[in-house]
Length: 466
Image 1 (spheres, rainbow, N blue to C red):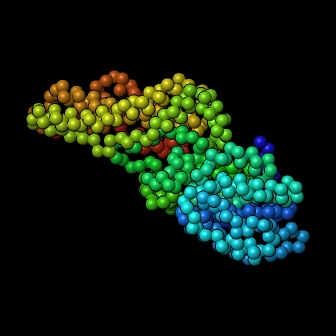
Image 2 (image 1 turned 180 degrees about the vertical axis):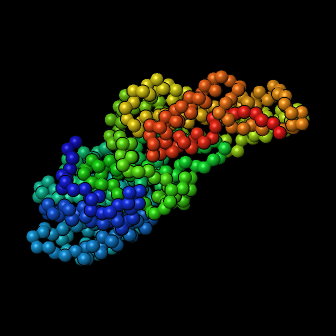
Image 3 (image 1 turned 30 degrees about the vertical axis):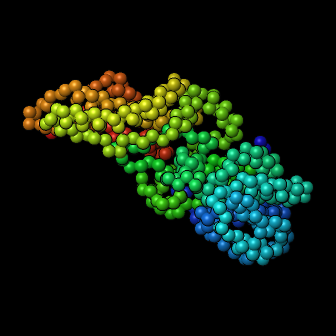
């Protein structure tokens, strides 16, 4: 596709954006306004402001609309510069126009922008809004040559995001840049936390990583900022020649600190200059399926990711009193039930990824390399921990003797050795190799962080006594 007209100057050169990616709503609004001003320098310009009407976007819309309205009110007429045409609308389940017929009067534009509200439903037809903008204003662009750009302000992905395949060709062909002020996508997730009414991601077209909770209830690794916008919005911006501007609150980098909303200051972020090598594949649904089919390791990863989230044992029983053989046997049998419930799904995830391991070295994309190695490494580790736990309990059931005759309790501890099965020891070694490769080859990335966190818990078991 032919890219949209560009002025040759990035909007990011105009505004001082912090290197860690923090961008306030006001700063994002300033960037959008500068993009409009940049376009005006090259000819007559129409800007269409389209605001999310859902209650969840209220704070973001309020900050951005207030700033933009103030800019209109302060805008001065400059001799020789074309007047700015402005249209204003908002959307949730439907699209509503506050200023459908473009005006060149700044006062009217400011009034229309100040009239936007956040009283609609939580359903957001974001891409239907873009489609309506295209239909409304393509004649202005094509027949009269007016430079036309759209600015969307929304906090979510959009419930109709699959429309993007039809829209990217149009905005590129008609040279209508789309700018979005919105939320970054959580790394690898459609949703944040348990709220399924608000979709923020993922950053990629499909799910590209297995979902496993942490063994033993350790610190969660899910609160990670992908460094990109939601796939469909980010792709629409890039393909049209616009920019997705992620609004993030200021905050520290505390792994596992969970805020009540997304985005939040507790989410872990990574350097933009690093993450640019790991950008998702911005392609159509058909092209994405072709990509998955092009390599068996990639297709295996995509299949494993669809299995769904697996909850590991948060608090496995590790202490077993040996004073009464019957009671010990009952205790061991009860503990084995948890592993038995987990085993089939963990084994299924591992077996799915194993089918693709011989084709891993054919992958050339750093993103897919990191994703496969992390997912296969974690699935190997999960298989060792679950099956190894069960096997260690079975070994104790068959009978073990204390070295110290005064001992009364068997204690199962995490360890990188596992004596009950050579196959599990080999798998433990394989898991550590894969996870360490992620750390070594993909430093300062979400995949490396997760691999490092996985390795902090030994991948295996040993019996000790007390």
